[in-house]
Amino acid sequence: MLQIAIPNKGSLSEGTVELLREAGYRCKRSGRELMITDKKHEIEFIFLRPRDIAVYVNNGILDLGITGRDLVFDSQADVIETLPLNFGNSAFYYALPKGSDKLPDDFAGMTIATSYPNIVKGDLKARNVDAKVVRLDGAVEISIRLGVADVIADVVESGRTLKEAGLKVIGEPILQSEAVLIAHDQATIEKNEVKQLIRRIRGILVAKSYAMIEYDIPREHLEQGCAITPGIESPTIAPLNNPDWVAVKSMILQKETNAIMDDLHDAGARGIIVTDIRTCRI
Image (tube, rainbow, N blue to C red; front, side, top):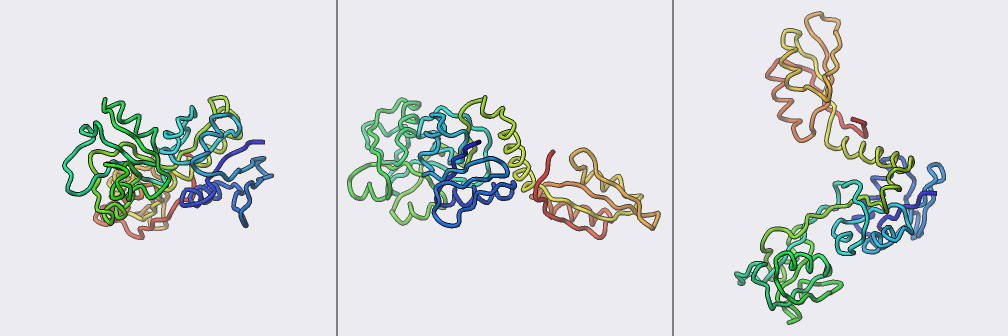
């Protein structure tokens, strides 16, 4: 039976459970269960601390896991990032008091507080900067005020917590993170049930980027309409009762929906309808 580790709490857990549900798997807890078995697909979902997931997968105790890329990097686990999942997005930055003008290359001799010491040590090594790294498990932003550190390195989403602590982000992000599917090794990825899981998840992710557009357009403007909505291979075209008009159906990028609708209307299209796609294979 395939065993997959998923986060036990927080936004990573919520996003993971929802994604797997959309892909047709049963992994929603009714309480605080540590394990849910999807008998139909012969998969056991194990709920673990997000920080521990990469360690279990690295050791081969579990086949797959879903956790944050930042947590994978910091664990130094030797796992394969199989698929980025496009949720739980965040960036990892250095931060200093607002009045400071130092940059990361100026950190020699300073103390840096973080919950991700291995990420920071790796970045400092790449910069050839000799600084002290102190690991803290939480409330990293208060460490400068308390005299524990000169600099912090932390995950930044809105940046509001840093501003409230009188800090500012400096430099480029050390790491861009998101939820990722990780595997123990290539042999695991080659299993049929894992390939099916990856196909299903990829179908959900691709579908979120696309929409289906349908419209009627005068036959004389069909070439212009198809140029606006070329689709994946080509649009679907169907005749209408009025021989001077045709119906067109095509996939478009979600982010371009409104601009495409404007262009189609200008080209003479009418009855323009856009619908979401739940999943797909492209």
